[in-house]
Length: 638
Image (cartoon, rainbow, N blue to C red; front, side):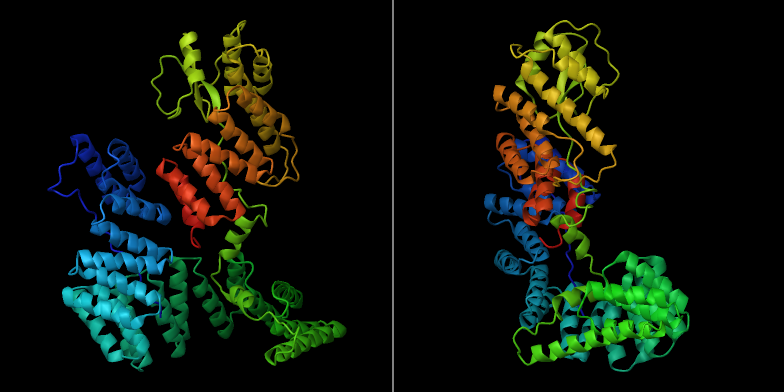
């Protein structure tokens, strides 16, 4: 059985005896911790960011922000914040404890142990420290040390259910069923609704032949935790072993009502349905499994057998062939397909499959005897193909570029542009960055409309009548761009000559207009374009890049032109060059959230998973919520 991993998060308030530098900082900390309490981690991070900007020497906001990042699954970002809190205050107990938990979650067990060691020195009577450290020892297969820590945790706090449960698991694995039962009973005396204790106790009762007691424990556990699949699966398997097939079937049905994608229930139900004679229903279950994981050979193999049983030989042949295509050394698939071919009176092909199977078996025997060149792929690849719940293939394909779905649901942030803004607007959402060229323009051209820089148009359907000056052409072109009238926008921007003080802004928006127009053409052309792919492009972005370069020649520090050029390079297939430009953008503007996000997506494309998660975590910290959704999807191997 797997050991339990639990992280008990305690919301710490600002220490009551500490006077925080200013009242507003203390208030921001309280608002942030309140947001954590209500599971609004995004809002919490915003408030802790404000505190850090005001008082970067305080350690509490880094700790709380790290905790909020844990809630957003940004584990590496949390580690960085806990580390900063420790750097400021090396005696901050909570930061060591939570950093130890975070290290554990990303498999950095030795670092986790070191943090718990320091925490135990700071607070030797804190029972939870030893319980958490026990989990880390357990992950390192140091069961003796784990049990010792769990026992110490229990001595310090006899009500420590978490430690009892984990010690029971160790004892059960060692065959100390009596000790494990005692630990489960200790938990149930404190909490009659502990599903974990019922699960372990039921499992022990089953192993020792107390079937009635085992089922009763599983029933009580399910009543306490109706959505606990482990308990329901244990009960279903026990029903099956007792030949109570319809009770087992009812358990699988209930599991799938709770979660229709629970592959183990689908698979077991399919096998049971075959045993009960409901072969067509079993085929439906296998087909659903294939929808969930189209690379699993065991599902194809069993569906092929089911098709053969109902004499659908063509479908059976197709499934066995799929098995062989996925795993060419799968001997049983060759024999199964040979049998189907015999049923179809295709005897020569059947004999060929039998010969292929025998040749693989011969190579396997030679490989075991150490014969050179007798390799048969029997280990890791087959293991992954047999894993019903393996979802690594879709993620692997996404980051390696093997499929056109590489970054179809994770798109780059849009281009920045010069856009219109009513002169009297108090809109504060346009950008948190300023550009001196925009400020100069607005000061030189007071009127009803002003300019700003944003990633989306803020005002549409504005008409600038009869422009005659460079400033008016810039306003008119921007109005056309904001309304997606690309050709008229280009006409206005091209009227502004190189001698104009607004030439840089005009070139910038000229490039933006052409880029957005080309993107529109590609979106509506029916072409399969994938970020990073150079083939199948319907348009050439070279002129756009030249115009960004011209804008940058006039003003090399114009970070929006650098940022946009990076985006266009990525869209053109030059991912590495795009990352280099984004590096320059972030050196110039370290808080440019969209640049972190885009660089993270590009690192993800290249398979640089750790760099991707770090950048996406920073983007999330700076306010891009969807960055955390990407982290949750692709951070499992970081």
